[in-house]
Length: 295
Image 1: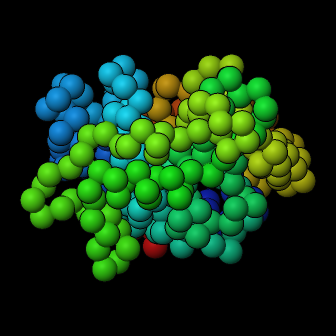
Image 2 (image 1 turned 180 degrees about the vertical axis):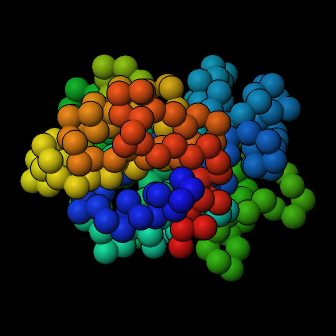
């Protein structure tokens, strides 16, 4: 029995499934931050400022807020408000449908919900591209940004196609600024806003965040995940940037529970500590390919 067959068997037999997802899962789904996709939608920013990928562009010191928010409108739209090029999330859902699952993820692109995962079984720990917060975060609130994103995308001359997706205009000419009146402000007091992404101690953990955190904790407690429940910890595309959120806890909970199995799918980075190696399944391969083989 190879590792994929072992994973299929373990998934079928487990009573509870805890999924931990990192950026590698969205990469496998085609939401890449560099290369062809970056050049297609951010070519003008690359030429004007020397930005080389979407991630680093999020930290660039743009000359004014009109340019800054033009960047972020594209950054958000093409990672949060469209479906990914590949059906990896949909394939994952088809595999876990009918299972008692919960998802813990550091991803901020909302793709689990776009694929149809139950919102009550999701905990986005690091924020959401679809939310703004005040710059100091002191009011503890977040604000939906979908309407603003669509208006800011239109202001840059993207064209809505017949499927309701914004595309490049035929002449390929885009604006790199939005009108000053479109710069987003807090709807409560008109103050400056920023993205609801965990970067420092101003990150807002709003009511929705705490509700999801409690749902996650309740799942772990009621399924005997930390004792002797028959649990599969399925880690997908989690790298070394924030191992303390998913990877290390998954290792620790597997070690504590003699009936638990740890599985890691991550192209080039699938491994487990020796203490749980006998109850680990590590697959160094493309996540999308592996999931499709299992369907």
